[in-house]
Length: 215
Image (cartoon, rainbow, N blue to C red):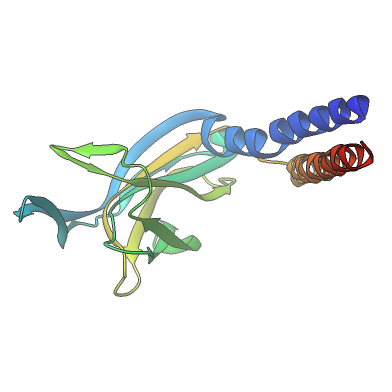
């Protein structure tokens, strides 16, 4: 039983490395930062009510396209965003955005984004004296076919339940594209390890109960 547990722990560690760790590295840390841009911003107001601080997002103040200089030498290229939002009073809320990359007036690609957040999530971005939660997402990883100037636009699609205050876009070049075979195997090993540990724990509990009953 002890040997089997050790094997399960090895599976668990391999699963963590090949699954979430590998995926996070490819998505957020591989390659080099090629630029960062403010693509969306709203007014933020802070008021005190009965000793409590109330944070409100107001009108959109900045929603200009970001100018990106891209070339095939940067491939693969990844666009990521960091979205700060005002925590909802209750539950989990979301907002939908449309991200569009254009060149010479033509769409290169278009992606719909959903930003979700709740009041319980850790507040980790500070704006003045206000700390706001942030969500990091990969918009798209792609290859550039023609060098030149590209424009990235991020626009809110409709009235949202979640008030997104600011969105910053990052461009990373020469990133490592995640291999589905690798992270798929990793998550498979992780799942097998977790289920195996649960199973052996239950078997161990039954063995202890049976031993005590016989005594």
